[in-house]
Length: 216
Image 1 (cartoon, helix red, strand yellow):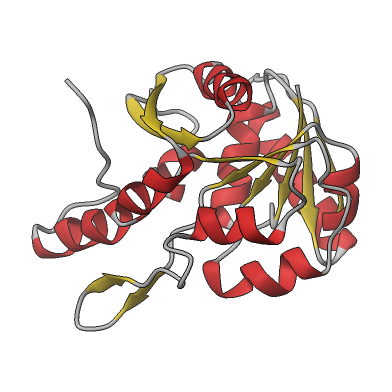
Image 2 (tube, one colour):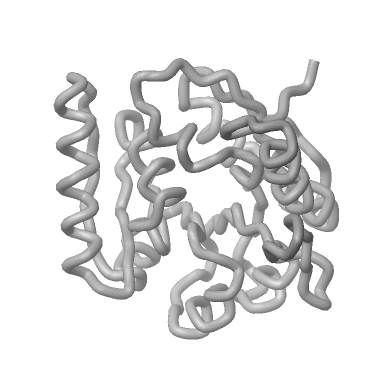
């Protein structure tokens, strides 16, 4: 699969890129193309040092969209509207939102937009024939970037298009130790997005790191 990661130079974007690039063609995108290229070099070096083959390139966010079949929006919620407003060419593509609207106050709080979730805001902003899924919401960046660790992760996937959801679940399944779960339609995304502030609160109050979820 050809995967483009918008905002791919952040911790989440780089982590997902390194986990997917041994199995897929991955484009790391950024507002600044030279930053994307530097990120690509660093990620490739980290994988090569471990003897892991990969296929990574770095381009602008727009090129990441243009060159890909699946686009992952690895951007903070506060950048969602300006970033999507600056991009085009999402028609007939699968777009994956791992975005969690939240704020750090005395504790972490879920702060969804009026649409009900970040995923539904993405749905509102993109062309009608774009197929939207939410996924990767509950995995800490450090987990993705710990390349020597064996993963044991559950990833809920929400979406209204059955074919797109199946494709995203296949993509997730290609990462060793990561299991996708069908969590229902896109409207359920709010329930998944609010798990991240919960996990962060659990980590904080119990002195834990990189807390995740499992389904047994």
